[in-house]
Image (cartoon, rainbow, N blue to C red; front, side, top):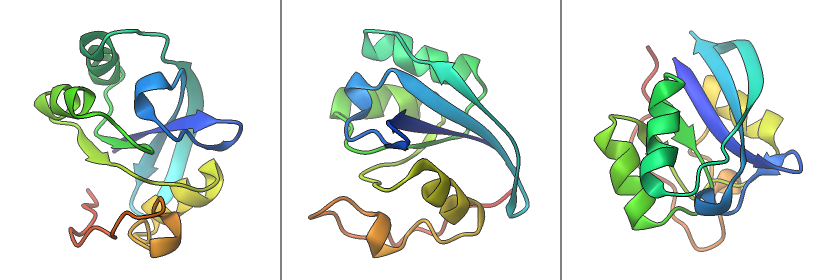
Length: 120
């Protein structure tokens, strides 16, 4: 599974819409097998959604995200885990081990998702 995290100064970017760097990680089982940085210098919602799709992303982990961006990304069948906060390494490890729904990874005022995180 290919996971993308928006990053800013080694933390999850607070807003996807203005993010310019992604960490792309391959997650297999409950481990991280590969990771690298990718620029996300697209301006429009269409081009950002297409870029994620071109990179083969299955899951996007980000902070806040506007509805227009979210709708286009989900149209590419990419699952979004929004309103996430924390350091990139902690969040990625939490995703890989099934602990991403912890309240300490949620932005203030955002409830923890009740949906289980799919592992395949």
